[in-house]
Image (cartoon, rainbow, N blue to C red; front, side, top):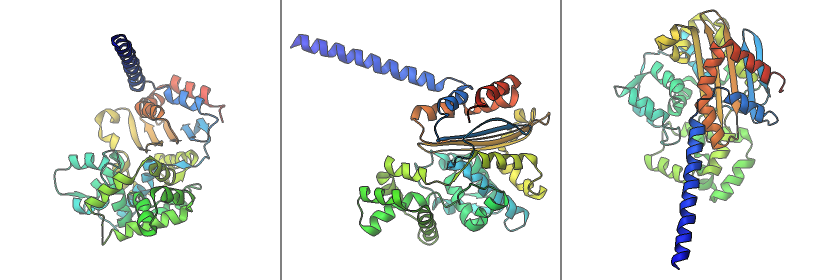
Amino acid sequence: MKIFLWIGGAVFLAACIVIATGAWLYIKDVKKDEPDYLIKFIKENKDKKDVSLLISHNKEILAKIHPDEALPLASTVKFIVAVEYAKQAAAGKINPEQQVSLKELERYYVPKTDGGAHKAWLSELKANSASLQQVAKGMIAYSSNANTDYLIELLGLHKINSNLESLNLQNHEPLYPLASSLFIPIKLMEENNLSKKEALAKLKVMPLREYRDMAIDIHSSWQSDPPTSEEKAQLLKKLDMDFQQVWSDRLPRSTAADYASLMEKLNSKSYLAEDIHTYLDPVLEQLMEDSRNQEWLLHAGQKGGSTAFVLTMAMYATDTDNNQTEIAFLSNNLSPKEQAKLTRNMNSFQLKLLKDEKFREKVRQELKNLN
């Protein structure tokens, strides 16, 4: 018996060492600064339709892969809300300095569903209210879903979606409220007396138009009867990974081609009226508040998004030599490691692409013939 226990203990110890070593190597790999990782990822996934990429530099396409493949946008879709905010501000329909009570935003906030975005934004505020401009900036910089849904209600969903046509985004699905869509499974279970398994099966075959309409109906009901803290807590208990997968898959979709086109329009400063940019640029181009960026950039804006399965990013920049760059990257069905490495290395990839001609040539040579 003693020998068995000793051997068992040795095996257990060896297993612990292997697991610990594996975990250490995994963490080391994920944390490694590797600007080339996106190139590697694209090449490894070139035959899959879960990646859509388009990179343009001075009107020349450096790289593209499945540019017309529609994929979930996650929070990158918030560009469209920001554009409508700026249009209405320029037209005098809304006042960017108008104060918004944080309690108003609370109705749209579901804790632990946005990666801590809204909570992080709130921690930066010094009062019980925020200006409308601060709300819009929080939507972009912190990716607050609560701020987004507040703006959807204020600006009007129809007016927001009308930008898809005016911006000539040919493959863009309509937007709908984000937080309320999380409650669709609960609504199905409660109103139809369905089990989680039955609700999941119904969700998977539900037409997208019906799904969007349900999200809009729930959002509308919150204007007079917002969800309680208890209802939000119950949602978290029921929203397992299967439901999260459906939610992620049903988010508004578009293509890298559409978003590269949008980035080019924003980068040009000529597609939208100058007075619109007066209100839009402070929201989209918050990275220009850093004096270090002002040394080498004339302007630049970006927005990324993610779910447990998705990572997306769109950005535009013009440097002090008037070089213009646009990037649109969409990916879906990522492994946890892929998502972690893409998240870790996206910023360094962008910086190197913007600053290093040799790196741009590497991107051009390695990715130009993949599509």
